Image (cartoon, rainbow, N blue to C red; front, side, top):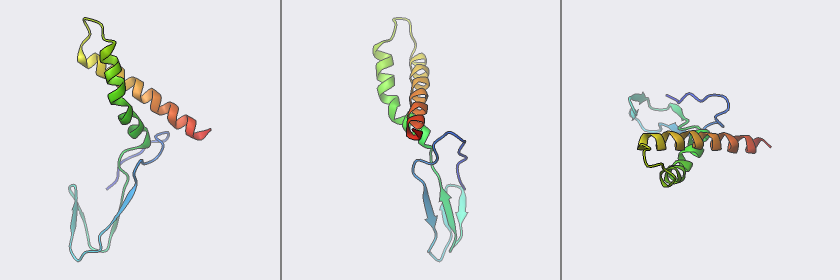
Length: 96
């Protein structure tokens, strides 16, 4: 059971390996991890992690700059687009 990461996502943000060293099955979400087996847990991409950390700040800024007729969903869309633009820039800066 693993997430699908795409090229350019920066790889997994918090990769982990779950090793079942117990004598019984473990449940990981809807998946069964048998005794003695290992499962790579990739979690979110680094790109998503960067964007998620920026969202509260960008959403706050979007709301403060809101026009009188703006809707909240417009603020969220603006903040999300800006968060991923910034996340992409951070990933690119890591390659320099």
